[in-house]
Amino acid sequence: MSLDKATVAKIAHLARIKVPDSDLEQLAGELNTIMHWVEMLGEVDTQNVEPMTSVVAANLRRRPDAVTDGGYPEKVVANATDATENFFSVPKVVE
Amino acid sequence: MTKLTHLTMADALAGLAAKEFTAVELTQAHLDAMAAAKELNAYIIETPDVALKQAADADARYAKGEQRALDGLPLGIKDLFCTEGVQTTAASHILDGFVPPYESTVTTQLFRDGAVMLGKLNLDEFAMGSANITSHYGPVISPWSPKDEAGNFTRKLVPGGSSGGSAAAVAARLALGATGTDTGGSIRQPASFVGIVGIKPTYGRCSRWGIVAFASSLDQAGPMTRTVKDAALMLRSMAGYDPKDSTSIDVPVPDYAAALTGDIRGLRVGIPKEYRVDGMPAEIEKLWQQGIEWLKAAGATPVEISLPHTKYALPAYYIVAPAEASSNLARYDGVRFGLRVEGKDLKEMYENTRAEGFGAEVKRRIMIGTYVLSAGYYDAYYLKAQKVRARIAEDFTKAYELCDVILTPTAPSAAFGIGEKMDDPIAMYLNDVFTVPANLAGLPGLSVPAGLSGEGLPLGLQVLGRPFNEATVLKVGHVIEQAAGPQPLPPLVS
Image (tube, rainbow over all chains, first blue to last red; front, side, top):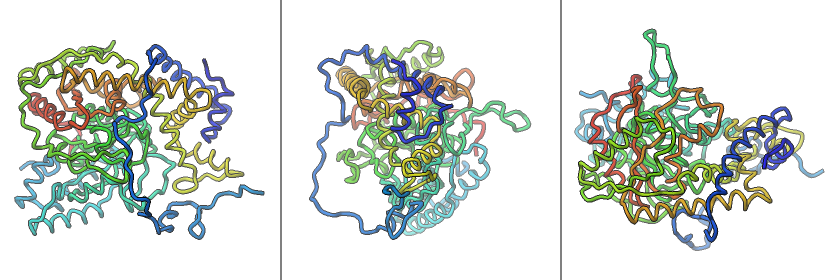
């Protein structure tokens, strides 16, 4: 299947990237080239194959449920464009 | 005496211990070389104050006879590693002004062992690229690029990518060694393009904590150096279990340098028939044959093996990596760090920030990733790719019943010019055809310089090993290095 302009606009929206309408056509072309190329995976027999979720066979470790870090809010917000009283600030979302 | 910037790490350590020169002198020689080589654009930021302070500390330790494993060695750090108090950009506009309040585990360990940081090295934006042409800070130029008599470039060659700044700096003698990261070949392919050594360790060997994430199930850090022995020394400091990375594996880190015995008698070297790809230049094929002959002469036995799903590795990678990237890069939203571009509401602020902050290749991959993870397509693309990935890993498991290591070319060509292969993203992706399978399967892989192309550009051979057997990979790489003999210097060198 091919991605049309409307689908590309929807993906851009999901990805929270503003794409001007004038760029949609070219972007659709580029994405289609890549998506058509990966179609070749359809040739591989993957019946009864478990999807790989981890490259090394390892169980996640457990540790005591204790606070081991933190206590420096000023460091956490140090890189924010807009931080007030150790909070991240964003444009108003509630009317 | 050899110029200080031309020493290997091993020789520099010996010289420092013998008080032939100081760490400050060694560092200053590199800072001077960097100042004279700005045209290569290898460093995004130089950190002379940090470097000279670290070097003075190293000298104090040498004076007391308390030197550490890498004490006083000037290194470049790929600008994907967070460094406390020093800007970290991932070569992206979206990280403008970001100064990490913490240090990555890998750099923490290098500094623990006395290494000196010369600066942060250029790379492809978020490590996405194979030519170092997607950096917000401009492309890196390979020190192998030819110039005319007037000193102007006649052709600007790429250093490979994504660790292109690391590769160029080490080859041009602007650092004794450098850190790299490898998601699909980003250490090995640039190492091959500039004629240096680079090793991607087994997934889980080096902590990913504090490294800007691209594709979490594929990313691994590793050293880029001028000799296999230097790679062995540097990897030992970089590797090791870290509780802060849940995928880091708690296995002992061996003394890799001690493994370089030259004795590979009886070792079985797998030669995968599927790596003879269509259109591979004859000189690459010839180099590969030469590598087989060298290992045979050293007492190893070549064995033909089959990795039947090789041709599906790249397409599987170009689903898995963008999917993970789209998720990892969701954090860049203008709220907590980096660039913010205002909009009429919160959503538009996100969209404006990400539109301006990300470059074209990064946007393309985020969108591919978003698409393959979106409702209705997850099974058809992402799940399918993860199943194909399982089959690729199974190919290697079966192959390692017949052999101990695998020998292949590192890349299907020598370095190309900046601006070439730009029109078609897939032509660029094909650079990684031989390196991507090791990332998908989590295996260690090394690139070692093995000769020159017809045009006089470096070509590398790749050695792949079993999980956590970097020692054998390095041992075989060392044998190839010795057999290939001294390699010529690039034309642009300090």
